[in-house]
Amino acid sequence: MKLQDKVAIVTGAASGIGLAIANLFVAEGAQVVYADINEGGLKLDSARAIFAKCDVSSSLELDALIKTAIDKFGHLDIMVNNAGIGSLGGILDTTDEVWEKTLRVNLFGVFYGARAAARAMKERGVKGEIISLSSILGTVGLPGAVAYSATKGGVVQLTHAGALDLAPYGIRMNAIAPGFIATNMTKDVLGNPDFQKMVTANTPLGYVGEPNDIAQAALYLASDASKYVTGTVLYVDGGWTAR
Image (tube, rainbow, N blue to C red; front, side):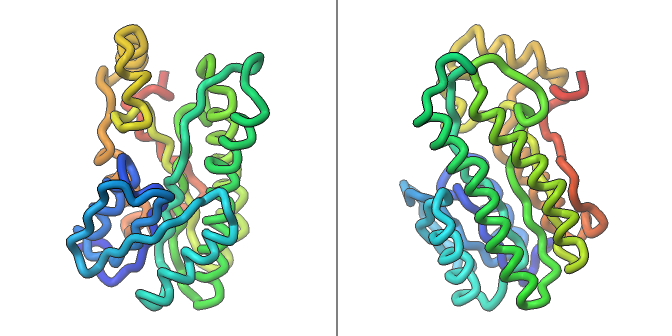
């Protein structure tokens, strides 16, 4: 198993991409904290998995989440900053409220999680891995998604700069940039036939991805297979950004 005896936290793990990542990590031998603001219908059937409630927009809650993982499992090897929200609105009509909420969750939350995890790893001499979820919209534009795009672009640069800060301690920091993935967050927009057609037309592989596609990328970055990889953004997008 690729993550035997590793300890991981996955935020936003009650559904979608986060749930797929957390489940795969458990299957690969890790002890995993499934963190989410809402437990929902999550059912954990492994002694190596626990649930912890966490609002990633709060630095205090993320500090407490790291402590929960260490108190339960003894240390922390892998932090996956997956929790995020979608938001619609262009430059002319995005409200202050939407702008601030999107930044709080999608960018502040990633920073708070990365900082708390890195501090814990450094303190204990753990050469760990921090993985954050960006998006193709952190690199390319899409009309009507200005706040979301801004936060995901921020995650890219946070990853680049953070990787340089943490490299002296052997802590790696990378990001994954998914294309359009079939989840609860995207079901409304992908349920629109015209939008679905636009997505498939702009995806060279010609179809929408699945959460497990992103989980497999996270497994690569979390494992020793990527031990010489840091400061990179792994695009898992069916070829969208290659156009």
